[in-house]
Length: 64
Image 1 (spheres, rainbow, N blue to C red):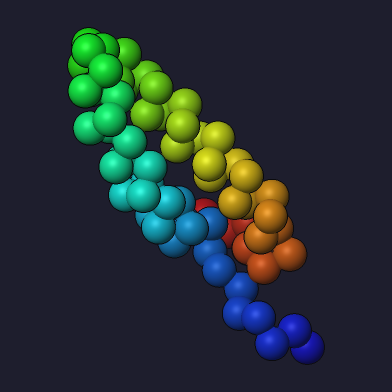
Image 2 (image 1 turned 90 degrees about the horizontal axis):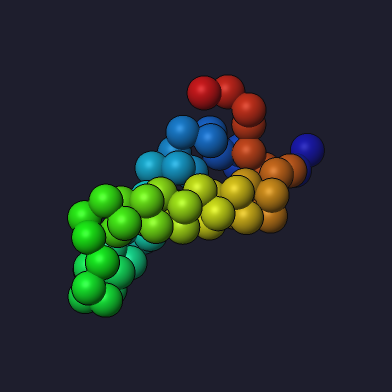
């Protein structure tokens, strides 16, 4: 009945990861080590993914 198509969580994550990956160069430019950059990017990615998943919850299927 809804005209909005449902989106698989897998595709949602695949869409968000490259967007958050742009932060890596900014984090690296701050003088952080590779491990710190990786940890910060993962935290950023998880936070953004969670927010988008909550905002789009009615349109996202739970199938992985």
